[in-house]
Length: 522
Image (cartoon, one colour):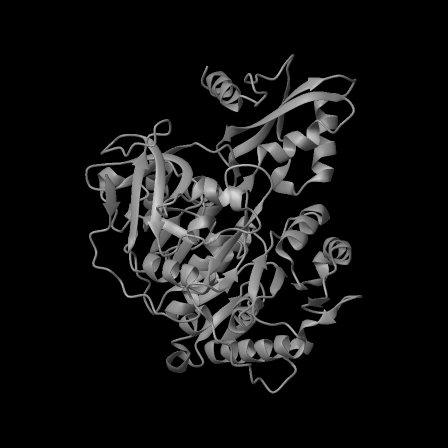
């Protein structure tokens, strides 16, 4: 059974992303487009467009051409929009990088993406410089000053006449975020101008923003959620976006109070904090009218508790990097019986549920793997045809790896994951990567890593370890923490005599997951 939205088809502009996002600048003029939350530093819509033109011209002067890749390794600051849309304007490709990445993580992404230049900040140079030197990055630009880097301001120091570039929205790539997909090391997700612009336009049509809205950019812009459904969508819609370079709950609440933020795009751990944390009562949150939650499932109890405490409406959506953001979005006001749902499939988009064993299409309230088809499905994984063929079938259906079902009204519910990724506070952690690291230690004979349920983080990485030497759990976790980005740290560890495996040697993580759930519930 194929599900579609009952809204009429929506016309998506057939143009490059930068032109679409900046389409309302003439009428918006001196309205604040982006405000740096901690400092109040502001970029108006006119100033933003001017900066983008200068950046595009500066990139062109330095030989950065259509199809070249720019690595963006920055926190959430107003210049992120300038960089992303300036690179896009010259036909370049943004490979956005997790701010927490280690030097080794950076090396993998730089090499795999073929990044030509890097734009970062002074505080990140200790990790970025050695990675860039190893990977042959042509030039590093830094927002501020740092040794072995060119000041970002030099890129803008020109007459601001960008080159004329012909862009095919359906074929030309604009973004290359990295996702672990279903297994293994992160892979470059090839997204076109049409992918991003269509997801932005179609998603916003469900719960439209109003001109007076103020949004807060607390979720990272390197992540598809922050990139498409916060940063680009806010500018496209003509609202004001207040940015936060890093998350701090008190500062987040202070920004809501100071700027009278009206709409929040969040992940479940933040919704949980707004629903339960005592700090919330110390701040004025009465300006909030609407909250969206995505990137991981949110229980209906927390959804309802947050809405009741703040006196606002809240809805869930569901998506992946590979679908350029969202593919299902609930509409407000959410019917009482539909809390916990991620909503209907987007307009211009199709979805179905299939049996994970046979591939047969399933019907109403039958659980299986969720598939999606539409103009915002990725081109594929960079340099990885096998992985692409594994998740996009011959008919163009993207296989999400997530287990869900649709009710009689076409509302989808995501209930489990066929794939084995761990979602720690919406960050993806690949068990295979941590297992490979663990077994490289001289004192460890074998290891498996699974998601362990956690109220605050959603899931945390838990390791099952078979020892062959004398070492404590604390020593192992400390060693891993020094080797990986913070969100990848092992946070629970259990010693076992053996790791359950299939006849072919594949780790049976599902057995360990079931044991873990049974122990937690006992």
